[in-house]
Image (tube, one colour):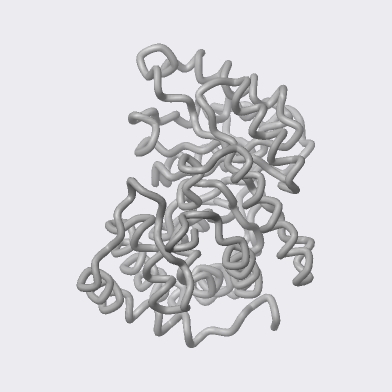
Length: 322
């Protein structure tokens, strides 16, 4: 946002998307948790998606897909947001469980009906967003996720529950796609779950927090969608590179640094992420009220705590250009 007018700052939105793609990030989430989707109108959400797509295309990153948040409290509302996202240029949608009427929608059957209903109506493939912290504690287990994911238009799950065991079970049962691995992967199906019945799209098991990026890969995960990649995208990408090159000791060392940095950012959330971008890269600004800005002392403290991670980040190349 413009710091003075509280309006969308589209040049900066475009600049940020291209910076991430040049760093080697292979997909962009728009209108997710860090994107403050809950503070934007439908028209503003479309503007963010459209400007992000246009910026990526203009910079030569047409192959970088956009995953758009499309979470609403009803099936109908989520489908409408998915249609908006498709119209604006997104390729996938990321959908949270409904939670406002937690007592009425928290059952497995209600969640199954919600996600399959959204998948039926969405013009874009759906990624389940399992993030108990923002949905009144609703935490779908692996059996339910596997069951919901039998729908042909549901193609992935983001595990911001940070449960690597759950990710392992889902990735195994649904034969999740994986990046190059330093050792042969065991593709033996689980005897306790059906494999995905419709193979229209490789299933994608996303780690949802940067502090278990390497653990996600060891667990058979596919990729990560993480807020810390806004600040240190090359560091996040490098963990994947080292893993695929078989340099596990180096990957482990870097994962520890990444986890420390992610732990710092997790305590300051959206305001801290934006203001640390401002401090290190000259853009980022402030969140929309009622989220509060950090004071100058807090920003300086945040900079000090992130020095190790940012030193690594600044030492790495833009991987997309190499």
